[in-house]
Image (cartoon, rainbow, N blue to C red):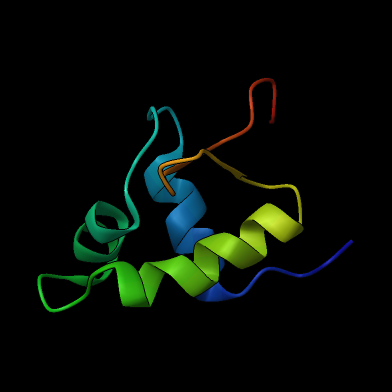
Amino acid sequence: MKILTERQKQVLAFLRGKSWTSPTEIGRSVWGEGHHSASASPVCKRLVQLGALERNEMGHYRWPVGYI
């Protein structure tokens, strides 16, 4: 199993229980107003590769249904 980075853990904690969320909202909510999609997208894309997040056609992210 892959060890998650601190940033990945922060994103997962923020998204737990939320519906589809934009990378801009993720970046601003997790790391502050100066951050946006450029901060969150690479972290989220890696989490998608690991199977920890889903990404929809609009580029928004959420926990996979049934993921614990």
